[in-house]
Each structure stands twice: as C-alpha cells, then as structure tokens.
Image 1 (tube, rainbow, N blue to C red):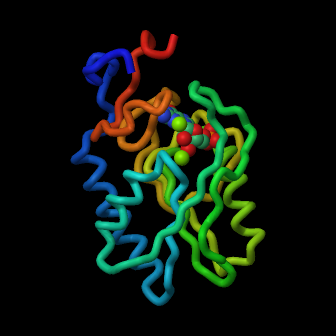
Image 2: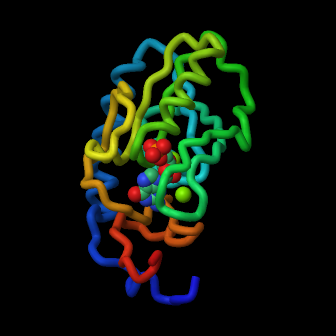
Length: 183
Ligand code: 5GP
Ligand code: MG
Ligand code: MG
C-alpha cells in the first residue's frame, strides 16, 4: 500500500461496523432456528469471508464446526475472470452433512455457483448459502441464496474482509474505494 492512511483511499462508508454486527446477529438467530434439529457445518470461502465467519459464528447461540475452501476467481483487479480453481480444498468429507456456505459477497455469482455445484457433487445432506453482501445488478447467474445480509449497488467495495490487491481487508466498515486507487 502506498498510502498509510486507509481513509484517504475511500469515497464513502456504505455499511458501518455496527450495521454489520446487528445484521449478523439477526442472521445468526434465523440460521440457528433453521438448523435447530440438525448439525450444520459452516464452510467459509477464503479469504474474503474470514471476518464474516468470525463474527457470524460468534453470534450463534451454540457452537458449530467450520471448514475452509480457497478458490481463485479474481486476480488483483476488480473484474471477475470467470475461471474458478480450487487452491485449498475442505479438510473434511461432507457426505451426509448439512453445509452452510458463508460468503462475503455475491457479485456475478459465477464463483459461488461453481462452488455450490462442486460441493453438491460430494453428496452432502444439504447446501445452503449465507452471504453478507450481494449485488443484484451484477448477477450473471441466478443463485438460490437463503440468507443475504445486504443488497448493495453495483460498485466495487472494500473492507470487512474484502480486499483490493490484498489491502483494506482490516477496515471495520464496508466502503467504496476511490477511483484514484485502482485507475
Ligand atoms: P463473483 O464470482 O460473484 O463475481 O465474485 C466472487 C468474488 O469476487 C467474491 O467472493 C470477492 O472475493 C470478489 N468480489 C466481487 N465483488 C467485489 C467487490 O465489490 N469488492 C471486492 N473487494 N471483492 C469483490
Ligand atoms: Mg468471497
Ligand atoms: Mg479479492
């Protein structure tokens, strides 16, 4: 990062830390109710979902195991490559498990629809999706997403785990990035 002060690179805070936490609390209650008589395995997609996973699972009234997958779909830029490759697979076998994918953002939906199909091919009991953010105007494929934190405009955002060239993940809010940073 050239700039030391992250705030100089931002245009606008879209979602504050407090708004995010409140919403995750609501989602956690709904999810817990939904899986009341089942064991759920939380599957996070690295690296963007790290913050969502950490906070969401701490809002759950009880404990649930987590596992992680890493795929590549974006490079260091802001456009989807459409190409998905597994960089790190799950540690565990998910046969007969109830899987909840925990995501940071659904943009075109290409990455997540690929991940979902990949997990469904492993004979789990069920696969559902929770995402903190979704950009309805950017959708290229339809994805059945049971839990969405916030629908946002079709703009590139950073913070709360979301990066630009690996920076800004540590911002506590979700914000739009100034064009001077990436142009
Ligand atoms: P999709 O395949 O849905 O287009 O995008 C998948 C991935 O692209 C997301 O999981 C995220 O890592 C990245 N991505 C999509 N939109 C944004 C955005 O607005 N900001 C950032 N930082 N990453 C994004
Ligand atoms: Mg992601
Ligand atoms: Mg990224």
